Length: 269
Image 1 (cartoon, one colour):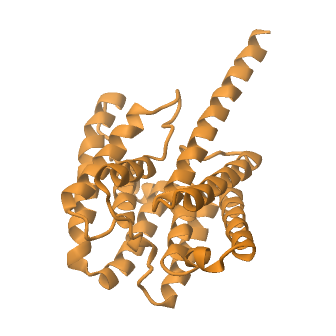
Image 2 (cartoon, helix red, strand yellow):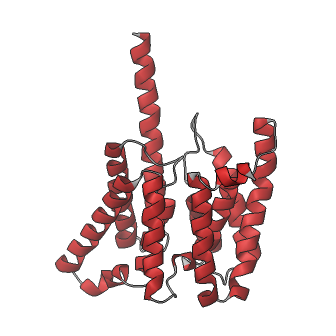
């Protein structure tokens, strides 16, 4: 009991509670019978794959909390109309990718984002971002922003979120004034508005793949925003937000590698 209480005080535990809250609020509007098969499949498959890997890695059974979060995010982004086995496959790809693409200390990519992009291009999966409460009343937006600000503050990633949202909104606002406003109007409306907030608060801030220091957070946020904008404008792919975080992940992994190499050369000199 003490261990459980301690877990739910950690950022992972708090994020689990918040995602479960968002799913519970969003599910009735989407249709519980539509939501639960994919949600259950993603969470169960992700945990079943990660648990034995953690057992081998740490020589003891550990609760796969990271897999639980990955499964929740995958299911809450994918359309509830997707077959449950596609949602489960996406979650499985996410967990496997966490161990395939790594630096010495952490996974390179946000696993949920990488898997969602992969299945979008391979299977043409739909992404409704229903977990962002787009079909809930106006109070849903308040719940999304309140929970998002809370967890962003707890993981100390506020500069990252503000840099991303500021750059993102600025780029699309300039485009609206310089060209055809109707082309980008959807960005500021439901469901795209809720999607970008969910993305910024709950995906971009992933601690293993996001920068720690504030200047690096700001740089990463700008890179993710510019990438998302460019993919939307030039390609028009529905996964433009996820493309942004993946490019940000690559930049952060490169920066960490360069930083360690610089520190090693300094120590040797």
